[in-house]
Structure formats: structure tokens, C-alpha cells
Amino acid sequence: MKVLFITPHLSTGGMPKVLLERIRYMTFAEVGVIEWTNIDSDSFSVQKNQIKQIVHYYKTLPLGDKNKCIKYIKEFDPDVLHFEDFTENDSWWMYDNSYQSTQEALFNIHSLDIPIVNTSHSSVFTLDKKKYRTDYYFLVSNYHKLQYDNLLNESNYEVIEHPYIVKDVDDIEINRCINKLNFDRRKKHILTIGLFNRNKNQGYLFYLAELLGSDYHFHFIGQMSDTNDWKEYWEFLIENKPPNVFCYGERDDVDDFIVASDLVIHPSLFELNPTIFYESLSLGKPVIAFPLETYSYSSYHDKLNYFRYDNLKDVFIDSDESQIKSSSLLYNLELIESVVGKNILVKDTTELFKNKIMNFYENV
Image 1 (cartoon, one colour):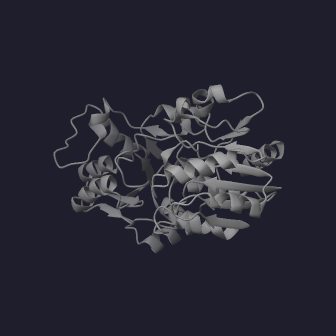
Image 2 (tube, one colour; image 1 turned 45 degrees about the vertical axis):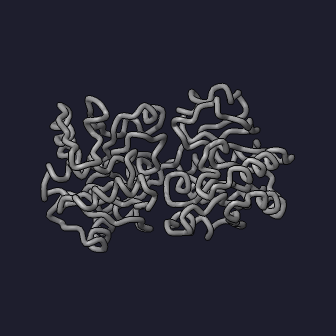
Image 3 (spheres, rainbow, N blue to C red; image 1 turned 180 degrees about the vertical axis):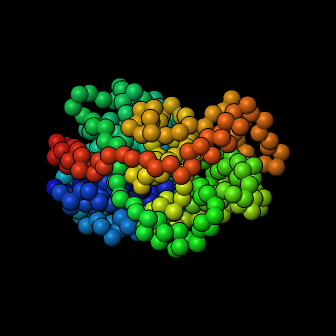
């Protein structure tokens, strides 16, 4: 079996991470990947580099010219085509202003006599925008069963969550990671992973770090893009960060950071199904997040700890004029103190994950 993934980009983030883990377990197939647009000229490429090492075929389309995709598809000659995002999203063309070329190429691809699978990684995409109905749908969250009900029937979809890849972490491994990262053993260490932007809401944790003080060290891993609105957000935070906040940019040793930390917090206000939940719980770390509706449809829902907020303005920090005056603030600070350092147990799902994806593609 030959499966060809077409993805809007492979810049570091949730979608490339999901794709990477899926490909790792697709030992039953010959796998190729076409990256539609290299949006950052390989500036942020941790997952992309790992994907390129394990696939049988890899291509990036030229800027502005997407019709070359047809040539690459014929060259690889797949049994299944899998678009790793809904092709109606503007992420397919906005980064290199290739709207016309993209629309022509997508029309031609959907006209090919090859079974096509579609996945979405959005929590807000609405079906009134959906132009192409594909043969099958690979859903990464049960939330999409509700969101995309009109696309689905009993036989054209499967919900396959990201796997829990459980690893036994002993004291020797914890000490190795602490020593490697030079973490201060006298402190409690809190980790956050995600692109620096308003939706990810790192500013809230900068604020909490200042309130909790020097006994807590907050570590931030995440791409700091030069995109204007993103840079405006993270630049202010970095210029005003408390002394107990440490920022590392993009890293290829995320697991070491998780192992060395006492708590993982994901303060995002806009998510579908973050892979950091699966990664952190698999390594035995407690997780705090805001109670987004999308999380309630996933297997980790009852394993997370949840912040409170009265309204979103209470937890949105992006300027020096922002001050949190929320009745939930004290609760959130006490929640951190109560769960930091706890050990979490989850069941490994890698074998189930592999069997599900193998059955899915065999039935396409």
C-alpha cells in the first residue's frame, strides 16, 4: 500500500506533530509527503526534519506554482491521497499568495481517480465553506463527529486520537534531564509548549509566574514567529518577563523538558486536541488547562486539571495595561500549588493506534 499525504505546511506545530506520529506507526505502508508551502524557509523545522527521515518520498511545492503537485502525485503513484487539513482553509495559499494556482491544482487533484481522505485540525471550520466532499474522513477528535455530522455516514470516517506513548521514567532519567537542562533542584518547574501568540495565551502564565515568585520557574518552548501580529504579542512579553521565566524557542528535546518538569500548563483559549496533553500524561506529568468545550470530547478530559475564569478578559494578558482582577485568580494559583509534582498514570495506546490506522487505510 502507498499513502501520499499532502499538507499545507510542516512548520513546527500541532498538525506536523500529529502527522509525524501517525507516519511512525505506518510500517504497513509506503508513505510519501508533499508539503504545499514551505512557509518559513525551514526556520522552524524540527518535525519536518523528522518526517523527511522516515518517509519514502518527500517534495515541497514551488512558491506560487502548485500545479506541479499533479506531477509529484503521478510520480509517487499512491493508492490513497490524504489531505492533512481541509483544503478550503486559507493556509493552503495565504503564505505565498498562490490563491489562483492553489484553486486550480486542488480542483485537478480532486478530479483524479484516487481515493481521497481528509482530516481537519480546526475547531472552528464550518461546513458552509466546504467545497470538496472526499471519500473518507480521518478524524482526530470526537468533537468533529458533531461538527461535521453532515459529511459523515456509517462507513466513511474513523475517529483516531493521538496515541499515549507511555514511557517508564525512573529517577535516573529524571536526574539526567534535570542535569542536561541545568534546572535548579530547589525550585518547582512548570513547562508550557506552543507557538507564541494571543490564542496560546502565554501572557497569563507570565502574570502567574510573577505572582508565584522565585520558588517556581516557568519554562516556555515555542516558535516566536516574525509575523507582525505574533511578534507584537511575544515581543512585549519577552521585554517584560519576570526573572523566573525562561524562554527557549523551538527545541528538538521536548520530552527531556517534560521529564524534568513538575507540571505542564497549556493556557490556550483556542484549541481542538493538543498533542502536549498526550505527551505529558504519557510521561506521568500533571497538566492544567482552561476548560475548553473541545477537550470534553477527548480521552484525556477527566485526567486534566482545569483553571477557572469569570470571562476571557480575566485571563488575556497582552499589554502593560492588563491587570487580572478575577475572583478565579486565587483558585488558579492554589491549583498550581496543589497539583505540581503529582504523578499521573495513563494506559499506553500505541498498539491500538497502529491497528486502527492500519484498518482505516486498508478499508479506504
